[in-house]
Length: 519
Image (cartoon, rainbow, N blue to C red; front, side, top):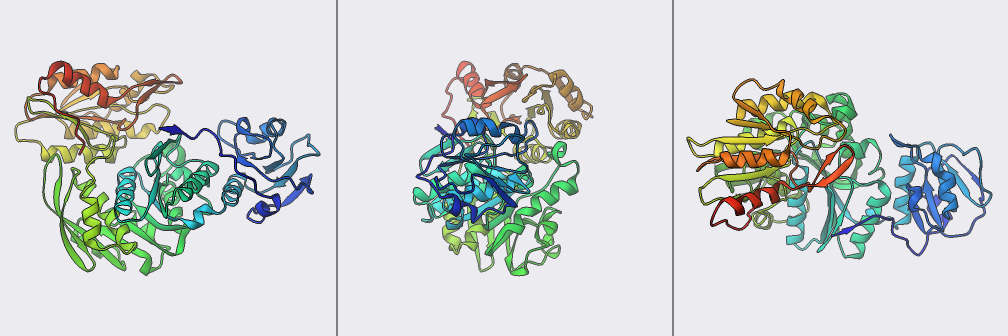
């Protein structure tokens, strides 16, 4: 698996051509330069001869402080909001009102407007983005539409996987990935679009062929301050639809009507698991799922398309995963795929890393599930789904914590949900970062209102303790980290995998251990 650590160096784009796509206020310095731009970057440490450096104002550092450093490394042009106190006669200074927007504009031009030549699908919401985006990607690829994926720490282009630092990368990296997709023959790209990315203009200027809203619940309130502000950030995605684009909405979520309010009627595709929700929004096309039966591995459903009814098996547990499949199906319909082809492709998806992933069943008959649930709503939905699927008389045990240096308001609520829904609760460390783990657990425990609760700060010990409690029919949910393969403690990242820990325990303590299975 490769890492995209640098902005790829291309043959070069003339400054004249680049400036056609940038909204600038003035030019200063070497305005007569004919040297081509060979890189666009917002990181002065990456700058090479021929670079265009964009001085972005960040939360920890202001890129304007590093203009001189970028020039010393070979930058021949700089995009900035104000001129530095000392300027270089050999450098062109491009003055703009917002360097974040200008970074997106410059990257789009530098990479040959690659984003304009792909049908881009954006998926936004608090929970379900990764599963929904990967379902859409698999469905389109299975139906002959070569599609790349950009999401939680990963970009996939065919068989190539590229490690990413963010769910939605910075604009220069993002457009570099679009260019790679085009070079690989892709016709479409599916990407998770975070609220941070929308607020910080990482996707500025991109026209989306489709935009999907999964849901909106308490999350990132350390960044957005309030739920109304959080909702407004998400809504921006639907303002960026192309003229022939469409929006897909989970209308079982109360925020769906806000997300769709600025879209024309014919662009609204609505998804529901409840007939009554149809009265809440009037859409041009409705998609509904009826759940016939379900177990810990799958659900049998009937999907209602505007012009067809299809019986299919969703190889993922829980109602929320049925909604994820339904939203993916709506995107497929918007792409003109036949309902039978859509369901055939989606029924073949049986694993999304760290999302309700069944790591293994011991010979004693219990199950261990790893899920990324790290918000109150996600934790409730995961626990509620497993509770309805577990055998009568068995127990549901949960191990979870909360991340440090993040929204503290959700901690006690997650404690309340866990104690009301699970039979046994073990509180442990997630990614404590710069906070004391004891303080985080104190905050969670304030919401515990009933049931058994144990505190074990060391996550390895906590998971092993939970595994040792399991009896036939019991289900263990290890929540919070999902796909992550590290723990962040006091500024350092250490390797850690919930899945590997569970596998090791089963190999050591249970005979007849089967192969890892995901659901």
